[in-house]
Image (cartoon, rainbow, N blue to C red):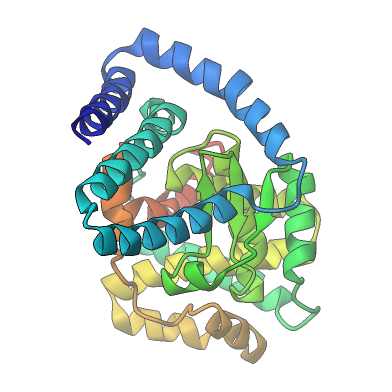
Length: 318
């Protein structure tokens, strides 16, 4: 038991050192990210793509079942210390892999979120509202399989639908990138109009784009570039949801007026994705992002509003 705990501490420390060195040493960071982006992640993605099953999700759920059954057995046989040491070693290995395969990508240089004023925000909301109104109610929402198929073709593959989405629904997760298996996992029970945007967002992570701001911006322009009205509508709806959330925080009266400018069909689509709910601060998600190296935390999602304003002003090129 003691030997396993020593190994667990050593492996976790090694992972921490890799992540720290990637942030502090530019040459090491450049070498490691080059290795990840051009060798390790493509090889892993190619291997996991050989099956339609979400390997990472199945391994995760199987691991939880084994851990639970092992805990019950350990309590019965009074070997709880052994179970704790095995669990610590497993978690240390998972952290080491996470630190080596994902955290260095956060060390890549990133632009600060552009600052914008209320007038710029209101202008973006009006532009997106026009685009959403123009497409709302004109066609049916894509099915999860169709949305993922088109997103994979657009972004180079690596996306899969969760087979047991209940755990994602429980944790309010629309999509997640699993660096251990290089898989972008999408929750098929999410509202239909979020699926194209979410799939492209997670596939942006699979292409090595770690930051949530950057992944959101890439997903937005990727959806527009496909030439699919369904993907364009999903992108505009999701971006309008972010913009409306920022407007709500600044001026609730202006937010109410902006919502009233949506057509009945657009309001129905926006309501289906929870676009009229007050913004929520997901503390757990923010903490994980900060631990990974994104100091913006949960704000990194909504910072895309400023990036889009800058892009539309031609001061930022996506």
